[in-house]
Image 1 (spheres, rainbow, N blue to C red):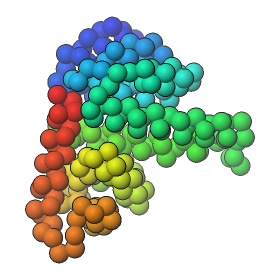
Image 2 (tube, helix red, strand yellow):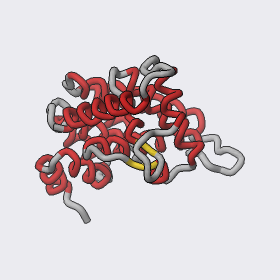
Image 3 (tube, rainbow, N blue to C red):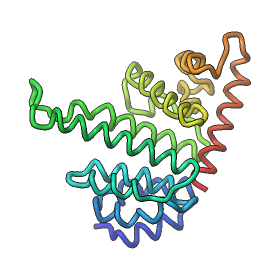
Length: 221
């Protein structure tokens, strides 16, 4: 079994790309991990990782209230503050959905159905963030999701990033063996006012992709 002290020590010492590999193992400690990560949120170097790990830990039974309180009390600044606001918003939505569906199973008895999209959204965004930290592209097939499903989720991620003043994270997702995103990416970018028809697609992708790499490097540095 993992030791929380050792995991926290190793995560703090790790480079940004490697640090994300500790997220789930630390989050598995639930409330204890959340409390220990509270002081990390105000750290410019560790804050983004702490917020994502706290939110992941909040998915465990009985931890949501501790996670919300910890994030509310955190003295975060800059992009980390934006992450805190977004995480709190998602936790509130999940709490409302749990309250309205948790005691009334659907036809199949599945009480988690309404939370599935939020969980998959977070997991996919984290996967993209990990690759962005490493300055790596990834294929749509590597998401492990149905192509129709992943397209909608990537659009949602891009809208969320755009609302926070960040570049479009899904610019790093491409068809296998290629270096350009699919048509859906350009449609989303156009809808958000970041891309215009007739604009040089390759140049736009290079600029947006470099902005993503730079944003996530500074986020985790």
